[in-house]
Image (cartoon, rainbow, N blue to C red; front, side, top):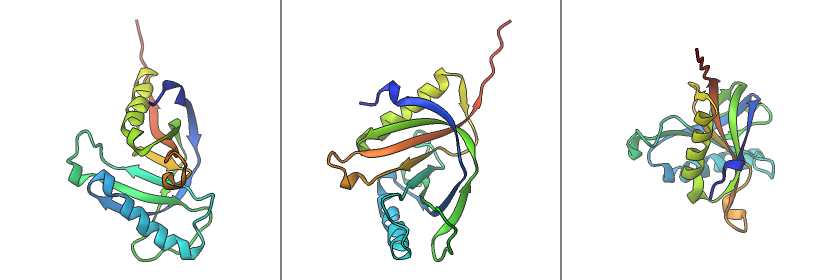
Length: 164
């Protein structure tokens, strides 16, 4: 179960330089794209205990056909690196985000996103034009309870409401 107390921060996220592969298709199939990203990164020495992976959601699964969802499978680059082949560079500029810090199983992601969005609306925020994203701090397959340590990020703008 995803609890409201997990949704506690609103903070500025620093610039993130990302190596990424674009993907279009069913959400549950993005794992194969991450496998390609890891295969590219491993010989370059980019995979270690500090590696952070990121998924950027370019479409909402609530309104987009599941076969046409656009996402980016990314990894945070700590240092500049020459990119090649199917790997591209994306820079996420610093932005204010609603940040949900969670330890959840893959099956709890939808509920967690819905709770994050409800928190944002309830507290007077509106989603900005920056695509929402998740940052992962571990590999669920290596966790004893198959859980992911992650942060969900919704970039926002403040909704000003005036009552006269």
